[in-house]
Image (cartoon, rainbow, N blue to C red; front, side, top):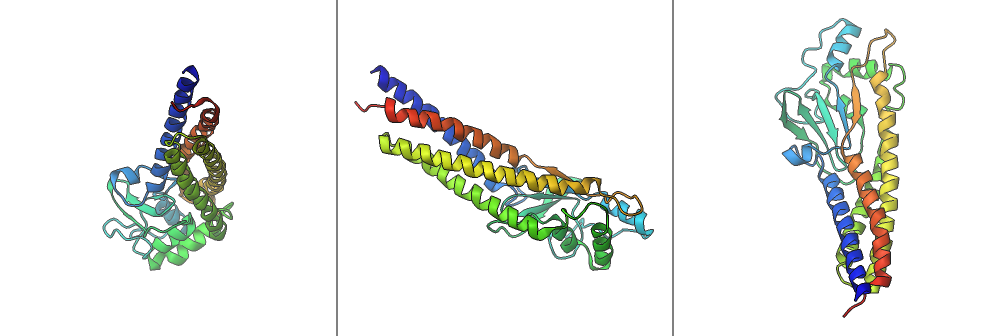
Length: 263
């Protein structure tokens, strides 16, 4: 009876940990799929380009009026920059800082790439395109920021690690409900696989964000700041929390194999 009670406690703890981890992973998945209140609050990385116009004007001496988009909420059509861009793992969204509700998102797709330089160039109006491209790409220490092909490759790998880990975590939670030795073993194995995949994805995203943040200190040959600021969003913290919970669930799932006994 005492052994069975211990088994029930182990099952409950393991299920709780895996369930919370699953919720966190689902939240990561819904980030930036649309500009709604919940999705827009969750992001892998944010990029503020508010100061780019002033920096460009200081470098060229020409006014930058018309560089930003304040009325036409379409991304990637050369209709003007959005002051703030936020990336999820399925899409990127642009927002007006004066009204965070207003914004537009790209078409959602699997493994949506983090390509900040491409996003800026694609949104820049045609008459500023060459100037902005030259200004950013010729600044100091921007090689990592403008390396879109590298970012695409890494975010692609990271996406599928998170995607598979989310599915594996869901399966681990649901089959763990069926109280048998086999299901507990499977849940423990799936939790372990999920934890490894999330750890790998988190490391990849941390590397990408760290490299992208080099733009924050980049300056033109004239010593003028590029005016772009990249910061980590809150979704990577959710990934680390999910990783910790999954690791914590492995022990009680494993213990359940030995301590749970049916009546």
